[in-house]
Length: 174
Image (cartoon, rainbow, N blue to C red; front, top):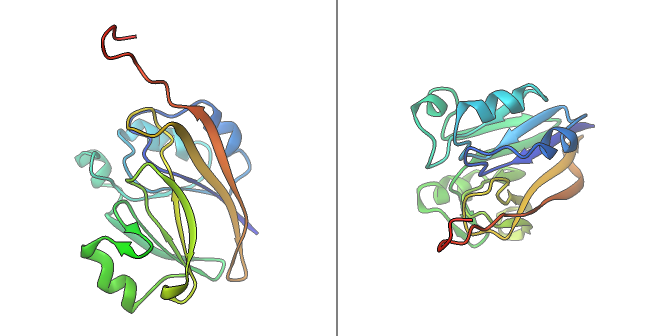
């Protein structure tokens, strides 16, 4: 079984716990909004990295990571992009391709909301959004996902809660 660590929306911040939680994974997939190349370099030091750029990523990230990644691992057809929408409400720029050629696993980030669901309308496609692992945004908890792929199946899906996002008091700055 190929073990995958899935993360998104780090926004310039990589929690030190990520290295421990992703220790032993075979690959890390980042669904966009790295924030900086340093985040990618840190993740690559843990395991081989596949990623896509997000809306906040600059030219350094965009020159290395594409807008979309479509690949196969262990018989699972994967499509990863940053802004993908949600089951039933997919982003318009990709909606037709997603309908015409649905992958087995569709991964996106952007919403900062953890969601894992089966989209029965798309031939039982699995939708995964790992939520946001960084500290910027409106999410309450920082999350990411670990899972395995083997023989065309997605196995042992685990949600990892990195803890609450620290919310600064806007009046005092603390």
